Length: 202
Image (cartoon, rainbow, N blue to C red):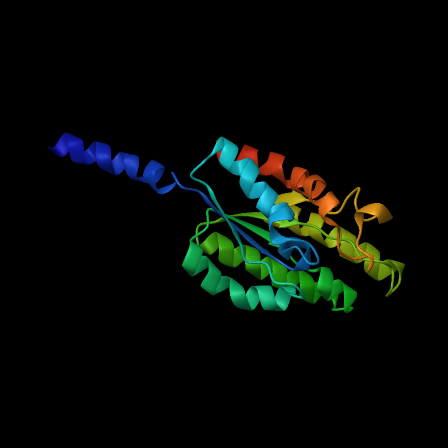
């Protein structure tokens, strides 16, 4: 009986990770603004992940227009509700478009990373870039913010989610900010290899 209980206790960590939960906290880029939600990159990611790990869950908690402030405020409840094993943070673009101080953006993201880890979740940071509306120094600082923060906090990273998309007008909506449905598979493929590698370690 004692041996059975010991084996059961040893198996508990594996059982706890048998149904990995991936939480996506983002803005309109991940919420699928302007396109059917089932065609968005997060929905496509869920389809691909389930091919390898059918029991995996991908929860899309993205809201169009959200900022790092909004994400930070929402995150504790999301972590408590979904108890993710991996939290994907795709925020900062709206902050940059509004000219929020870079240190404040970085601080908010850093706090989100800390909260996620305190809840037992790994973190994947998705980087963004913005037009030079506020000058080259600001846009360059914004671009490098994600890489330097990821290096400092040792997170997984996609340096620029819209790499190869943002510069192709045929893949962007008329506003020049949001990608079309045709761009979503490319965005998903930028994230998928990291997710599959992460799943292998679980």
